[in-house]
Image (cartoon, rainbow, N blue to C red; front, top):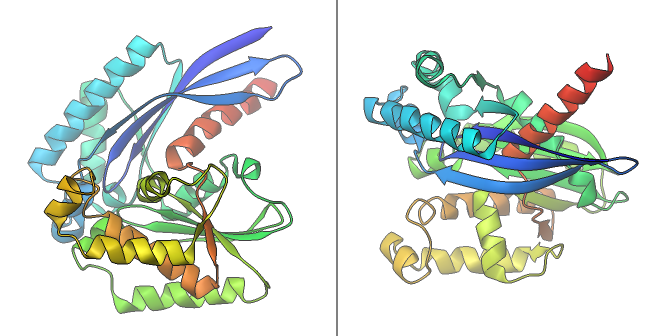
Length: 301
């Protein structure tokens, strides 16, 4: 007996807003499959408002409303049966974040959960990482966002420690990350990685996905610290305009990719990692899994 349902995840980040629609494929005596059906990304960049002015502008409020109405229509046409919308760093720090959530619900019927950094890290860590990792190894999982980065230590397939830091690409672009925050991160990484002989980094987020695609590496193969450093230096030799025209980067990627690489390289340096693996998963994937397992759990009670 084959059952295919569509679930949707809305990820409202500091740099972009995403709608992921996935097929949930259930078959008797087989593990459930999660297969990406559609992904739509809108670069609203809420963090540029919030991290400077502490509130989301009227223009971006309207763009959010328009985007959510469009997402609602897409979910309807795809016949999505369940969805979950989560807002992260920018919305949770905005003075008018709660007001905008209420406004969106009033106009579109879409309910949005504003989640804290620890919950964000937990949702991301609950993705199917076990498919991508070696159960005998130790990893530092780094999910870079626009407003924050989530760090998780995974040893032999088990999560040992997790923390969210207010170090993100949009914050770095606007020079809004204090030295103390970097120092706190260095202390945290040192504390939780010192007992391991060897650590690899797992990277997630749109920027590392793009870097991996550009590298031409085969899926499952890591990027080396040398490659990451070399490409970081290459990017810095080009102006923002040249990164768009000559390196073929989208305009909303051409600026944030450099601070993103700085975060990944810093994590690799402080943990002593020589390689970074890129499984192409993130918050939206974790949201889809959480909808499914919450549904299964409620059905068995």
